[in-house]
Length: 117
Image (tube, rainbow, N blue to C red; front, side, top):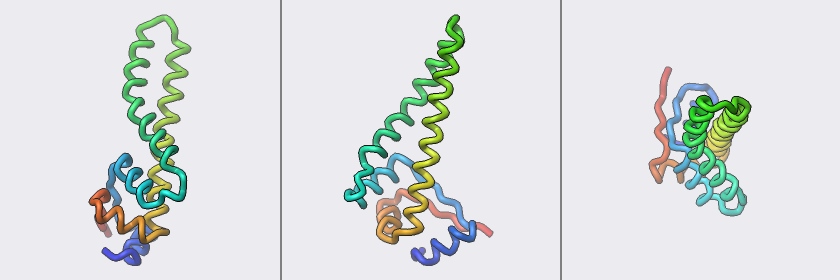
């Protein structure tokens, strides 16, 4: 699929994008080293991986008398999930606006694009 067709379908909301955020972030950092976002993206990815650990800790805290800690851990986990949503939005916006990044995502087979009516 050509970039122009991709942009038209994306703006018309006639396609589904499926990709791994970790791989897509790595492709983004490799394609645009001048942006200086590689450190930030890698931090978000690492924190996202720790959400599972935080969920386990929250379960353990539920069994303990410190209920306030459960609230803090839950807020932190929700913030990390919000960070992933922000990264996804940033990656999709860059795929639409930059053909170089779009081609890098296709070449590395990171993104799966499905058209729908």
